[in-house]
Length: 227
Image (cartoon, rainbow, N blue to C red; front, side, top):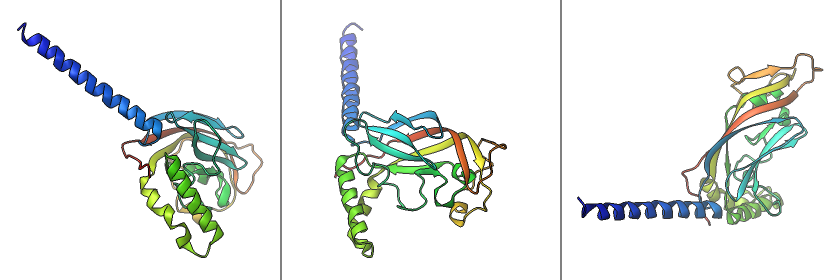
């Protein structure tokens, strides 16, 4: 019994060292942006205000206020803000209705915006991916009639990480317009999304999103390439 005890202790120490190195390696990869973050959090935001929360050591999740609602962004945790953010270029379609927009843009009424629920978005994690995607997008803007100009963007998309934003409660002034065809394709969970209607608001065609409660889940597990 006595002889086995030191061996057992040595084995436990070896196991502890293994898991410590594994954890250290994982933290290092996350810090470099080479792994997708795995976490979730909840938040709330009111019209005209933004929400920001760290995703990992390198990136922040941002629900940025815009005149028509909010836009989801993934920005560097520190340093200058890039021209395009990590989610913007990883979540097509571009310049059209997009899961990053929680807003009354593109003829979405307020009730349509919260009925697109949940919504999945994607994001890059490395500066190399972002730089390549930015060059490709700029190439398509210079040559809009030549889709091949931005061909370098498409091999990057499968490398992007995935996250889900779920609206858990909302307060809106509903729009009076008929539902647009583009909204009807994605906005199908209004009845299943907890919400409060402001009945004393002045009626408008698209309405207004007053506040949101939401949950964000970063799914992790899929590694992102550094190239």
